[in-house]
Length: 180
Image 1 (cartoon, rainbow, N blue to C red):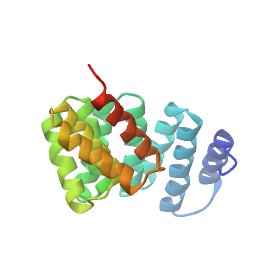
Image 2: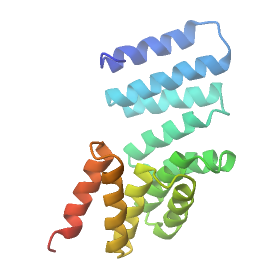
Image 3: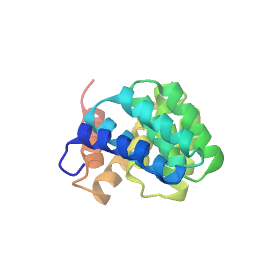
């Protein structure tokens, strides 16, 4: 996958998982990697199919559910994403990435109050989580807390100025400060 030949990598990983004699968990890991490759190749339908197969092989691996939730969100199926993330957080209630991701899905479903609870919990575990700070800033802007939103986005930029998350924080700051 390092050569950005994601479709070829996905096909090879799927074939390997299908043909190899190995424990189900290992096959599921290969399928999970294939799902990520399909995602990177832009084929969300294939990514969803392969990640669902990975879950069937290893239903206790929460990462496969998080990955499938990401695919669902990219397909604008925020309800599907929420279902997978609820399942993950039932089993691992302090998984910060899942809390942040669920807050984002809830925001997309106009469940801002519930999203605020998730993002608060995530940031109480990891107060410097870049995506968590970005999401809390977005929620604060929605809830008319411009000062709080600005503080979150400035913190993202300070913590990791060259990151993609900082780029998004800058874009949000520009919109916040722009005249209506």
